[in-house]
Image 1 (cartoon, rainbow over the protein chains, first blue to last red):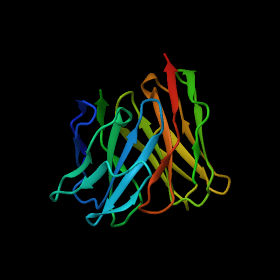
Image 2: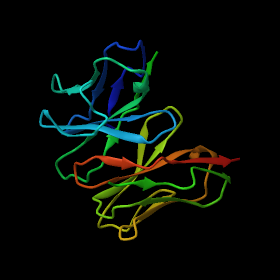
Image 3: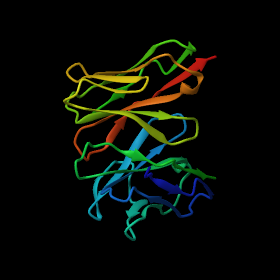
Image 4: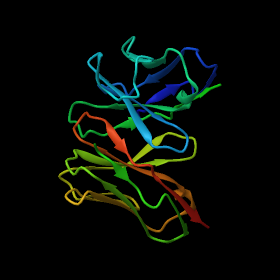
Length: 115
Length: 112
């Protein structure tokens, strides 16, 4: 069964460093999302992406964050200068457009630890 | 602003019990509602998706119902097993491709 894959599964970085989290969405999906979950808290929406541009973003998604679809398969989230409070599990999700039920399919997540 | 609430935060039941997990949301203008399972430190596994026009969906021992007008959904788990122990998350969507708004989840423990 097709699935969303994310790399790395865990990354440890120093405060102020740049981090890139990678996702390979399901191949025929057209909407892509990033969410995050700080330990013990709700899963929070960061950004959605369609047709090579951001379609919606939350107030969390400030200038330190960016997303890109560099080729036909990868979808990346970049954090330019990490802060301690960026430590969280980051989830990528994708959704088909045709015959759209609006169902989201999530990856296993990338755990980011900022020291 | 949509708010999703799941109470209680944690639940412990003996194996074999039938149980109901509740979810409420403040804005009834939803497109769909999705229930997820999350094991500790893991990703989100979609369990059931209910469209706004539907009343319920079933998959195996799971049944999810939706009462959009009252802003409520329930996830019914029949004959619970220790393997059902996990956190169950409810999430709603305002439009076909809009964001999901999540509840905090209910952590279920099924005792052998």
